[in-house]
Length: 448
Image 1 (cartoon, rainbow, N blue to C red):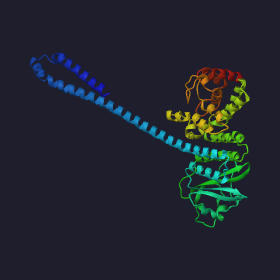
Image 2: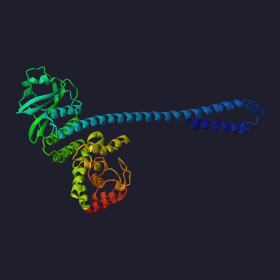
Image 3: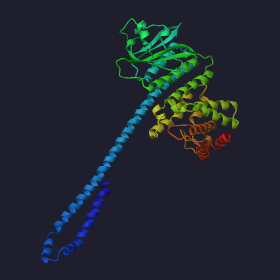
Image 4: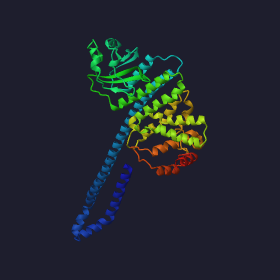
C-alpha cells in the first residue's frame, strides 16, 4: 500500500513539473502582456512552483496517510476480532476437555460395572457423586449415602468432614427423592435440621440443594446431594440442573445394568436409552430424532433384504448415531445463528466421539464403525475419513439418508421445515453426490 501511494505521488509530481516547464511561460503571458510585469513574474516563477508543488504534495501525502490510518484501524479491529475468536476457541476447547474428562469418568464406571469383579453400591454412588460435583461448578458442599434397612448411611462428603454427619437424621422419610429427575430447593431442610444437635454443623450452611436418587425399579438404593453455601452469591443455573439430570438418568440406567444377570441385553435396552435420554436433555432438537432415524433405517434395510443380524445392527447404530453430541457444549448444539468455523469443527467431531464411546462396549463395538461413517458422502467429500461410494459401509449409507430425511422434515429453530415433496427433491438433487443412489431410490419408493 505504501509503495503504491509513494509511486502515485512521484508520478503526479513529475507530471506537474513537466507541465510547469512547458506551460508556465504561456500561463504568465495569458495573465499579463506587460513586459516589465511579465519579467518580474518570471523571476518568481520558481518560487511559485515550489509553493504550488508543496501545497499539492501536502494534500496528497495527507490523503495517503489518512487512507493508511483507516486501513490500520481496520487491521487493528481484525486483529482484535481474531484474538477474541481465538480466546473463544480456547475457552470452548477447555470446556470440551472438561466434558471429555467427565466422559472418561463415566467410561471408567462403565468398565467397572461390566467387570466380573464385584463393584459395590457404595463405590458406585461415591464415584457418581464426585463426578456430578465436578459438573455442578456452583457447588460448595455435598454428601453421598446408601439406604440400608430403610435408613440413610452416609458414605462420602465434599466440603466438610464426614464426622459432621454423625448427628444427621437417618430416617429415610425425611428425605425427598424423585425417580424421574433431580429435586431442587426442596423445603424439608427444617425437619432435618431439627434433628441435628450440632447447630454449627456445615449441614446447616446450605442455601440451595440438588437431590439425586439412585433407584432400582421403584426402590431407592442411595443417592447424593449437592449444596451451595449460605454465604455464596451463586445459584444453580438451568444448564447445571439439566446436566445433573443427565447424570441422574445415566446413573439409574447404569445401576440397572450393574444388577442385571444378563448385562449385554440390558446394555442395549437400558444404557442406550439412558444415553439417548441424556442426549435429548443436552440437545433440544434431538427429541425423538434417534428413534425416528432408526425406524426409517430399518424400513430401508428390509427393502434391501438385509438379514436379521444386519437389521439388528442397523437399528442400534441408528439409535446411537448422534451419541457423540453428548459431550459437545450445549450452547453450540442449540445455537440459533450460523455456526462459526471453529464451532462447526467441534460439531464434526461427534461421529468420532460416538465411535470411541460405543467401541468400548463388547456388545456394541460391532456397530461403532457405522456410527463413525454416517456423515461420509458418496462423492468422498464427507467426514471424518473422506470415504466415497461403496468404501462407506452400507449401514452407514442407510443411516445418512434416514438422518437427513428426518432433519429436513422436522421443525428446527435454525432452519425451515421442508414439506415431503421438497425433501424428496433434496434427496434427488443430492443422489450420487451426498447420498448413495441405491439407498435414495429404495427410500423414495417407501415414502411415495
